[in-house]
Amino acid sequence: MSIDDLRKIARRRLPRVIYDYLEGGAEDEACLAANRRAFEKHRLLPRYLVDITQRDQSTTVLGQRFASPFGIAPTGMIAMVRPRADVLLAEAAARADVPFVISGASTASIEEIARIAPKSWYQHYPCRDAGMTSDLLRRVADAGLQTLVVTVDVPLHSKRERNIRSGWVRPYKPTLAVVLEASRHPGWVVDYLRTGLPFMENYRKYAPPDTSARDLTSFYAGQVPAAHSWAAIEKIRREWSGSLVLKGILHPDDASQALRCGVDGVIVSNHGGRQLDRATAPIDALPRIVDAVGDRLTVMLDSGIRRGADIATALCLGARFVFVGRAPAYGVAAGGVDGAMKALSILRNEVDLVCGQIGCPSATALGPAFIDRYDGQSVARGTRACIAHAHPIETLRA
Ligand code: FNR
Image 1 (cartoon, rainbow, N blue to C red):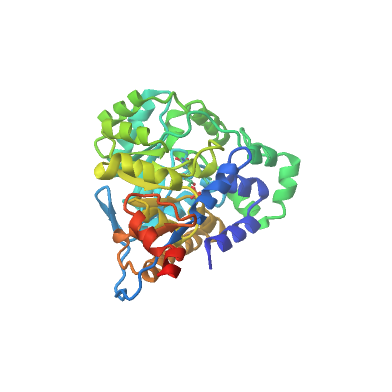
Image 2 (image 1 turned 45 degrees about the horizontal axis):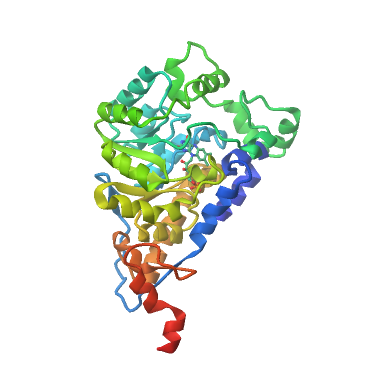
């Protein structure tokens, strides 16, 4: 019924070490919890007696039209939850006509995904070897993909204590305790024995011949993260002629700087709580970023979305488009391509329901007039009049 139901099915099917990799955040996981709380403190302000018989949530973002205002965020090493999970997610995205963002740590190649889902985007982590970055960008362009996403919120690897405790540490050699726990999830074990540790396909051609899947993850870790700088972004801008998006922006000044560098869009994100545990929640950072850059930059958002109402809230607060990471990943872990489709259709149906219920038949018309906040505080330009009008005390006096 809900994304949380898919999460529970995924948790039952996956060994703890893999479920924790998917579910976990950094350190105390304060950021992970705060991402959800930040959505929950918002309240929508419905308008009634509006004709909502024809509802439409299709959206154009960075020159591409999609059937819904959300896409699938990049998730590295996702084939650990199910063999070829990247391909299954791409298939689901293509069928649902939403974008799939290929992870820089993908276990399927750019070329294969582009054939399955030609409207995919590619997410890149800049490499220490600049030649490798250039070659990857060329491959993305040759595969016909239009949008490059550069993730900027991994200047260093974070401390994911849950992962370390449950045994997800390179070079990925399971301890006896991990093997014993995994044996309680025979469906996953049979799949894993059949396919083994997945290869990070995009890096295979740069590693020495016959590099094993395990050694390839170490090779990749020797390349990423590279030193981060605005100069590196400017260089990518010169090399990449398609749409360029920075993922992981939280500060309005960084969004303004992105604009000056010729970037086309930003994804306001804290990496789903997996990087800086005290990072602000993207939904809280969003209005300041929208104020700073207005329509000059395509502002998108991810982190913490589990409901259609979260998507509507982000769009009301100024995001043009959003991404979901764990939601479709729970789906693909729970039920392969059908599970991923299920996750997307749950979210699509919930967006439709919310739009209908608040009297906004077109998702592109969502805006600050439809939002209130639990504490009644104005969070975006233009909301104040709306909030004053709807405040319960004012209503009682009236
Ligand atoms: C991620 N994320 C991520 N981001 C990125 O830019 N490159 C990557 O390779 C990965 N890998 C990855 C693996 C897994 C298992 C997860 C859960 C997440 C972050 C992802 O793109 C997105 O920002 C968050 O998942 C959004 O938060 P929610 O929707 O999961 O709450």
